[in-house]
Length: 320
Image (cartoon, rainbow, N blue to C red; front, top):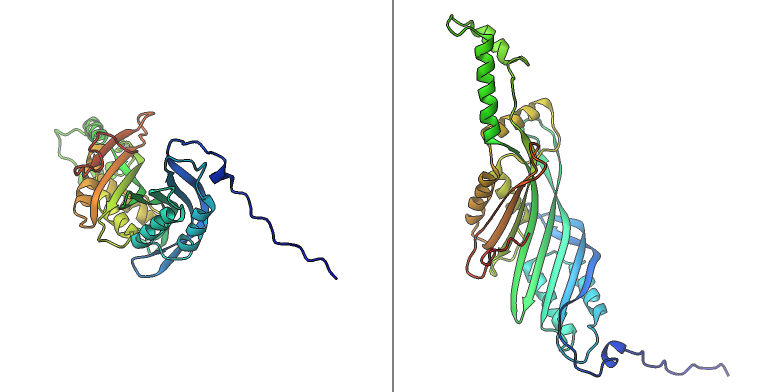
């Protein structure tokens, strides 16, 4: 008769059995940068599928257990985050499952989902368009029964220094006085030709690529991650987002936008702050703008927050 193997022995679990003594709690234990696809609904009701990296954590309460049941976190992330459209309700469900899966080892959970959000953006004047990538993070936390969901975005825009623009205009005025005898009648066409020449461009203001980092906390009653709406609101306030496809007419329109929206970092921060304060879906927010200056080797930085009691910025920290 063929030999029939006996039942397999129970697999050892040293995470539970190896530490008989009582040990202190750990703030967070889990996995970082789990590779998964995520699904997000766009404003036009289409679904966008993106590559993401997920951080999944729970706390480890004081006790005798050596570690958490880490594979259970992975299976939950793979089952839910990798297969369902992301909503605050889904994030809260996953956080609850994180805690439940740990069999009394944990009472807190955190989830971070990092990805590049892609939007197709039209050119300023021509009929062309192109893709823009916006680094994004969705964060959910469960802390002793209290949930919160947040969105973090990074946007790139152009900023032209108002002081530099004023100094450039002054040099152009001085060059005009040098090239023309203002005591005599001026020929209009001669002036127009001068303005269109390199001689007439005696100086240009400095401008630079700049970034706005925005972190918002959503109201519990709002069950969407409004990424496109947030991006549109912020770019609408700044007016000078970087472009994709650019023909000459688009570049000229961009130059005009920069001239009409001269900004110190303080101006840019206040524009974004005002725009976010008008968003009825936000419980709190914090923002930071960085102007990566072409004049200096350092950045010009401004930070602002809604700053409700217990909210961002209430402790004087920047969180960036």
